Image 1 (cartoon, one colour):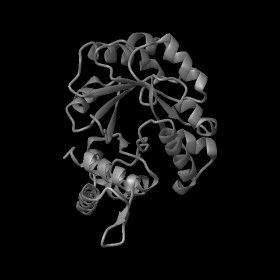
Image 2: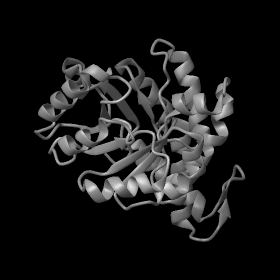
Image 3: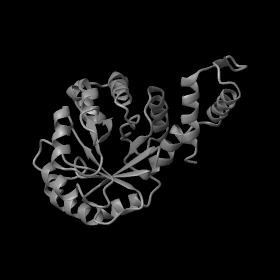
Length: 270
């Protein structure tokens, strides 16, 4: 999947929920061994996930292991790092680039994805994003970050969001997906939040319920107007290689053409 837009979390200690997630419309299923699993069920969640992912899966499956400085992460990584069904490992509460390097050196295997959930992690976002070639993406964990910063209003996270987006792109990584919208029944709020996230530069979003998936995909796919504009730009650029302006005043240069091509590529998901 060139442009994953939906990342559906499912708790690792509930195999029937994971099975349903695997048949959903999600681009990536994320089996969660961390926040969604109580301490006394960690071993069961790990074993159930390892059994399921001992075979290849029909969709991309990532596993969010437990916090790297906690008592469960080492066992998670040993059990899961080389299984055929694992497409990626999501590392929670990454705070320094050294943590990424250490995991990459000890557990060669699927691509790594770092979740930045503290003020320190946001400050070091670019260093983390460039820590090791095995790291294929970074994203925010907004619940923990909100608590760390003492932020009460959602707009208070926008600076951190932008910083992580810029760090990812500067490192040559894909635009990060948005963090989850915790109210699974507030689809209007999810729509508005996705629209705002898209203006910041996010691409896609994590979800915690299948009903959120079509809302996220619809919000992040190009609109008909955007597609028409992109097609007009590509046509004009093909006919005349020099910089020019469209009849509506839009100035076309290499950056505008590149953006139009990205829009058309994203639309091919339909």
